[in-house]
Image 1 (cartoon, helix red, strand yellow):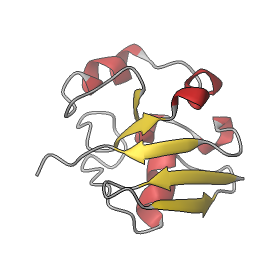
Image 2: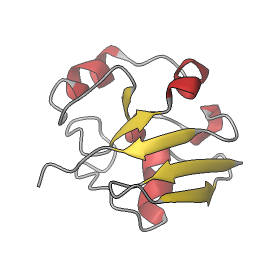
Image 3: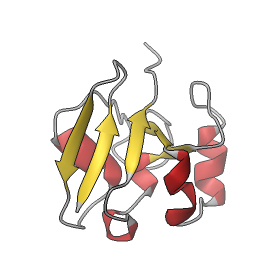
Image 4: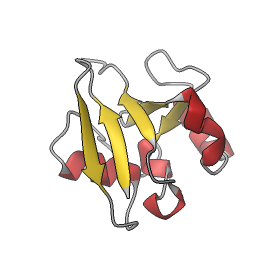
Length: 104
């Protein structure tokens, strides 16, 4: 499957995913600019992405833990998700996300 990720400068890359791992690990392993400081433990919000509105309903619902952690994200919005909480096995082909601005 292909996932389209736009970085903080507006450059889009298409990443090929095999359905294993999380969206965060795919983005990180591709060398894109994502901090993901907690390594996927849902405690830091540094893997914050904005899901394209056309795709928000195609993802599994957000857990209470993810919602709570996102409250500490930089400018969270209605389409905000933590990429560490999105398993690639549940991601539809063609998903589009944008990396949120970094805090630093």
